[in-house]
Length: 388
Image 1 (cartoon, rainbow, N blue to C red):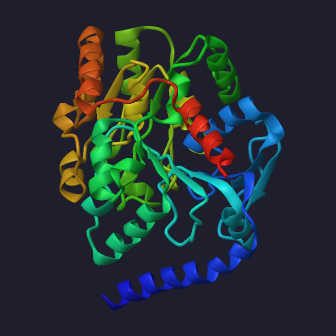
Image 2 (spheres, rainbow, N blue to C red; image 1 turned 120 degrees about the vertical axis):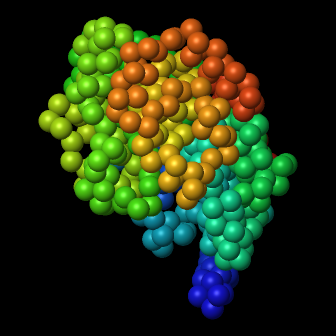
């Protein structure tokens, strides 16, 4: 308990010290973007940025929190890059009119009332439990209270996630925007040229079908390669390709994307490791089939009505340790606990039944996804920048 008090005291102390930055005025056309604590130009902040630049060009000042200076130079516009938690970052975060991140809000920043903090979150649907539902300690409750007080708006992908934000993250209902996720707009507003261009970057032939395996984070597997690939945890890549060819025909190639917390994964030679590819949405867009476990990427992928299969050999352990908001039995995706079950699910896949199940799933969770989230967020940003 003493450690908890010390951590909270440190947070309040930092907030008090940073208020010295109030001597610098807020710049009304300055926006700061942050995804995964500076991991890259990706997720929802990327798609808001692209829409803003499409509408306002270089009339706005775009600042990105980035650990690595070698960011995607194919993006339009002029970007100011700042290192996470550096003095430059603190300066820009305290003087930006708009702060956009793919969490909710940082707890240690003392934002001014005239600033607008937009939390976009980094997952759709309502699957893995989080917030107070996984850690109800006094310390976490205080931190989440600060987060909730800092954020101006939080985006939600569906009605079920509204309840998660309200109960597990203490977000007041009036701060929740029912817009869907900006990163998912790409699934509603795309064309074949985009898919071809992404495949070129990945060095994949346009006539080859793609299956993406994207397992989520597990706290006991971080950096421990032999645990992740031990026994039934190992996906049988060769047999999966055979099953896909049998059911869907054509040539297939495997892509593997690990969670950004995982490291040290060894893959077969014929599997493309796309773990360092910044934009997960582009990988989903070019994939014809997704193999998932508990990652919310299944929500994003389902918006395209493409086949998604669940490979969950440790589901009982996962439910015991973390559990789900939406019971796994209610997911529309065929579920397998073993490689043999996975191959059977692929070979017997019924697309018509799957479409009905996905449609019902979206209705049951109360989906807000319409492909217009980026546009609507930009309208809110414009309104906030123009306020006196």
